[in-house]
Amino acid sequence: MRRYAKLSSIDKKLFIDILKFFFDKCDKVNIYFPNTTKNAQAKEINTFKTNFLAATHIIENPEELGNLEESLEEKDGFSMIIASLTEEVKELIIQMKSNLSLNLGLIQGDKVLFYLGDEDECVVEADEDSDIFKSTLFDTFKTI
Image (cartoon, one colour):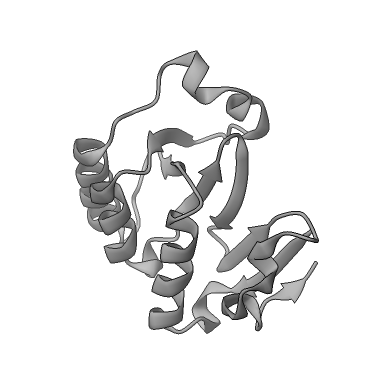
């Protein structure tokens, strides 16, 4: 089951609480970085990417990835980076500006539980009976 909300409609404090909620459940993050950036945010995106890469343990070991590569789609014009969700990476994600419009997913095992899309979307995906949906953090999210 999926629940959806517009990222722009989520209060900054609530958004940080949601991230921290998933940080406790997830062990990896994936981010799609545009291969070329020519808009006004190009410098900010490149700075975030540089800081992110410096902070990460990039997952290259096939055993660590499991079935994850099969469940994440490649996107033309983007580089996908999968990294361990370390404390430093968590802090970078919390500090990330929402206007960067990066696709980001928080992953537990080989399943993406939470993701941000580049079109102002924020999605939670879990089994219907999951304890995730018992949290009041997602009361404003719509079922899709």
